[in-house]
Length: 332
Ligand code: SF4
View 1 (cartoon, protein in one colour):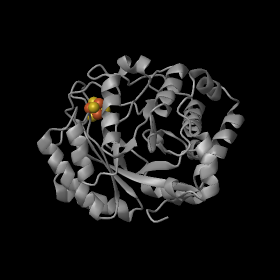
View 2 (tube, helix red, strand yellow; view 1 turned 180 degrees about the horizontal axis):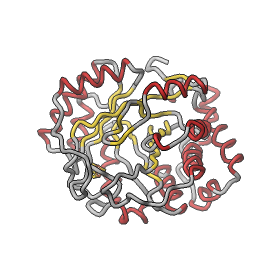
View 3 (cartoon, protein in one colour; view 1 turned 30 degrees about the vertical axis):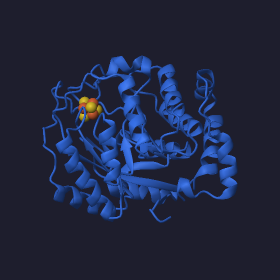
View 4 (cartoon, protein in one colour; view 1 turned 90 degrees about the vertical axis):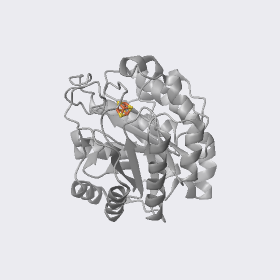
C-alpha cells in the first residue's frame, strides 16, 4: 500500500500523529525508552500508515563519479581524499537507461541517480533532465541527487518530470562542521526549500556512526521532523568507513543504537518512507529484520550504492522471503 493510498480509518489516526513541534527532550526520551517499548511504539505508528509487510525498493546509480570539490568527511568521492574511487564523467544517456531497465526488471519502483557535484552546471542539468525523462518513460519513479540547486534549476527538474530530489542534512547542525566545511547547514536547508517550492518530493535523511553523540542523532531527526512538510523519504545511513576518508577508523556504532534511530525516525515522521540505506552490508539479517520491525520500509537494491558495496539482490530476495515481506509495486 502506498502512503498516499491509506484507508480513511488510517487517515483519521494519521492526522493526529503527524507533528512538526517535537521538542528535544521528547525525542531524547524516545531514544532512552526500553528497547521493547520503543519498538512496540514505532511498530504501532508504522501500521497506522503503511502495510507493515511491504517494502519500497529503490535502485541507485552513480551517473558522475568522483572528483567532487566538497569535503564531506565520510565520502570517498571527494577530490580531497586519497581513496580508490576513480573519476568518471557524466554517463551517456543510453547507459543510464540500460541500468534503469535492469533495475526495473529486478523489482525496483524508483531509480535514483547520483552525481558528485557541489552543484550542477546548467549544461549538465540539461543532460540529467533527459535522463529523468527517459527513466520516467520506462515506468519508474525518478530521484536525483546533484548537490545544491538554484530555484531555476529546481523548476527545470520538475519540468523534466522529476519525482524526488535527495539532499541529506547528514547530521545535527551542531556536529555539521566536524563533517563538512565547504557548505553550511543553511545551504542545505535552502536547497530543500527550493526543491519543495518547485513541487518535487523531498528525500532527506542523514548518516549515523560518524562519531556523533546521542544529542546529535536526536537533533538531526528533530530538524527533519520540524521541516514545514516531512520529507516523503528519510534515508538513514550507517557510516560505511572507506579507507582514505577522514572518518575511516571511527568507533563503530552499537547496532541497537542504529535500530533505535530508525524507530525514532518512524515515530517522528509517521507517513514518510524510512529507508535503510548505506551500511547494510555490515548488518546481519537479524539486524535488518529489527530495522524493518522498527519501521524501515524502504531499501536500496542492487550491488552498488554509488561507490560502496550493497548486499546482493539474491540475498535481499532471500531475506524478504524469510520475513514474509513483499516489494511495493507502483500500482499496489
Ligand atoms: S557527499 Fe556528495 S557533495 Fe559530499 S564529497 Fe561526496 S559527492 Fe561531494
